[in-house]
Image 1 (spheres, rainbow over the protein chains, first blue to last red):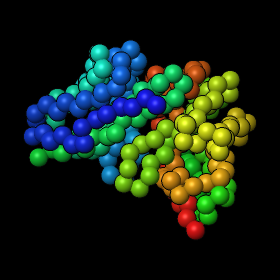
Image 2 (tube, rainbow over the protein chains, first blue to last red):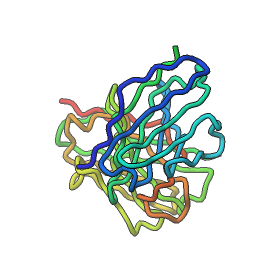
Image 3 (spheres, each protein chain N blue to C red):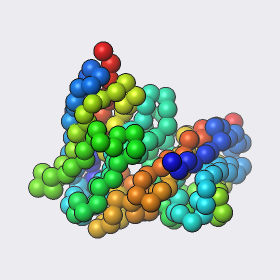
Image 4 (cartoon, rainbow over the protein chains, first blue to last red):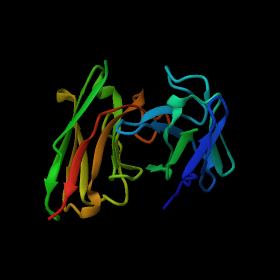
Length: 106
Length: 125
């Protein structure tokens, strides 16, 4: 079965840039989405189709996808960005989520 | 305002059945694909099942295939998940999620833009 691997944790200082990777076989040939989940809350879509931002998502969230790796970048990180982040892609008609990354804003 | 409200969770013994419901409001329900996604306590997200806007396409994760059945009643603006032969590893918070783009297959890549608060299913003897 298809797997998406993320680093368990990423730390970033306020105002700096956080990059979260998502690795999967030929992931660049698929579209990647990214979800943010804060403790006790439901997930929120922050990026879809690799680099598109839903309405209401700040411009500091951006995405890219090439080769075997999709990347979510948070520029000028705020304390409110501290959360778990999950990538997601479709392996044909089966949905796959990444292992998740906890972003800590120190 | 889009609202998705799940119900039907609870404590159930292994091997038994449970039916989850998701009541949708604030959008034209029958125009959108819908999903069930679950999250075991302290764990990550797992896609469970999806159904296209017109029910032409339905899919399941391997972990639930043959045991779970997704369905929708557009007249009632409701999504369902019939769960049979439940196992301890099915214990999770089950979320209902709406697809972002309308009139698409459930495996379209536009993502899920609205999620419910989830209903907790605990499988234990």
